[in-house]
Length: 210
Image (cartoon, rainbow, N blue to C red):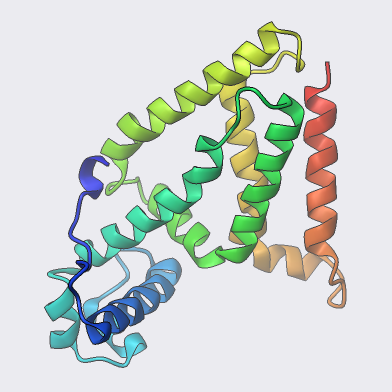
């Protein structure tokens, strides 16, 4: 995974080591997703984790290593639904199901979504090699699949790469701009997620219908 090849907790790690690693990762996610890489310090992570700075550095050699660990886990999780697009299934069902899963993930993992957004907004310095290799190749592969569906007349003609960009943009908006959404909508409106899901399914179904 390009520059994202970093050490992980081994199978022989003790229960305490695994527990402390999970605590550190969760605390780091909270801080990084608010402050970005440049605005985060080991001291902040330690305070959020309720551990000492030397304890943090026992498990991770640097702030960058913690950051890369988070990004690595995020990308594996984030891209799995795209990898799972089934070439033999109904294209519109596959694409709208992908939209639904991406929306669910943005709602389930808002901190991870913001972490990724901040990394990209700050120039993707830790992800540039990965984006130019692994991610670019995955997008190319899935765009080729979408183009084959278009050629077979199964979906309407669209720019397949920009279709994927549009899916990412619309679904992650609900995590990255959650504060704005809550300020605009009625405070007691608890159906936002359901409405968003129905709306996006209808939007992309209409776009892709031959």
